[in-house]
Image (cartoon, rainbow, N blue to C red; front, side):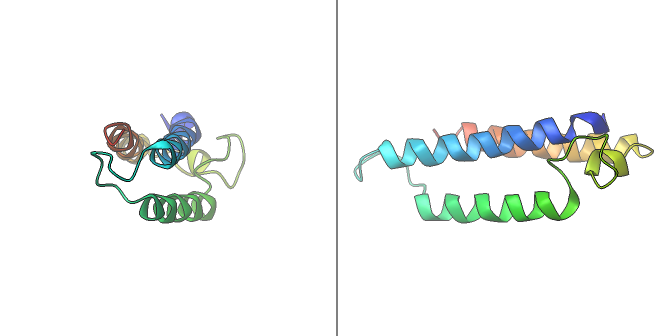
Length: 94
């Protein structure tokens, strides 16, 4: 499960970026109540978190989150589920 951490983290980054593009292309009268600047700030925070713990690094890298979680499959699954929830929340904003 830990080997999927980087993949799931990367999918979250992609969805953040897709949402930012969607918001940029939407008119100010769009039905969305999501602020583009707030989403950009959250992307920055997510990237900072991911860099600090190695969430986007391949699990073969000794400093990656996947490598650190290789002996804790329950924790790896929990983090993976949370990354899935972030991605789904971003998808539902478009």
